Amino acid sequence: MPGTSTSTVNAGERVKSVSFTDDTLIVDLADGRTITVPLAWYPRLLRASSEQRLKWQLAGGGFGIHWPDINEDLNTEGLLHGAPAPHINNGSRE
Image (cartoon, rainbow, N blue to C red):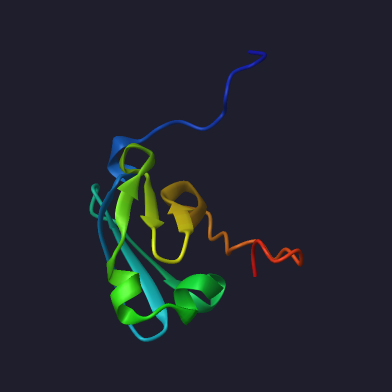
């Protein structure tokens, strides 16, 4: 149908918890899945202090994660698709 989206909202894809190792971001979802991605994909998180990384907030109805101290936003759809941060040379993304 014209104008309809092909993506569907799955309540199980809501963020349950966020944690880190020295080089990975780990996101546990409400449906029991765990997403683990390299911090190198997200330079702002890679450069952030441990304290800054731990100051995350749920965003986007529970489907997103926001780090106010470093102005970083991720969502479960992008994480599930293995999407690293875009590399833009104008300074807004690295």
